[in-house]
Image (cartoon, rainbow, N blue to C red):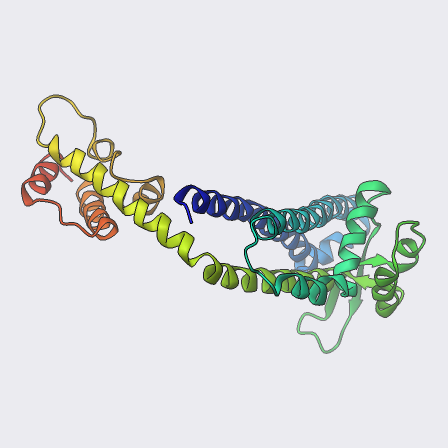
Length: 296
């Protein structure tokens, strides 16, 4: 197993994380609109006769967010399929239970197929009609229940609908509580990719060991070069800039919480460097760096 092969595999896995993050971001945006529209105070306002235009704007915005989410879901499915082919099938790396899990969780799942159908419908036919309703419920603390649904009959008229999607729609009755359906779908997706991540941690343990060993080696070299130049006369920038050779972007991100106190930032940066490279920084270097800190 070569270091470069391991690096390329892990690079593909990390790139896939962007698709997961996009999917999650679209879900949060979609749920924020659902939650806003179903809020008791907002709901009462939206259903006031003089505010029908506000209700329409909310429904339109929800349609946009729904479109983005189901498209992100399909992109995630497609990216996952490509990743499996490139990393596992073509390289003959055993991930034997992947295809059976996909089949069991999605290929034969009516909810999953319904969401795929919504993507096709939204992209190639039209955004589904959003129906908002208000009803009184004596059992509710607020007295009112606000729901957002899709019309089953409208969707069933689509020429692109498949049998499993029909099955799901028929099971919902005349209307589909779309928020409840998508929450359930999202939980299914997250459960699957949590399983995938756990399996990948086992499958790629050697890849990660190779990369981690190389990472520590490179960090130690960078630290050695840095130590050899300290102290050095002449302007070297702020204390944060001086350490750019031995800190990564992730390190700077982690240290940002101390950005308002340079001495504390440096203290935490030195601890971080020593823990990551498993090597102690000479006391004289620490003393020099501390002397460069601005007075707090």
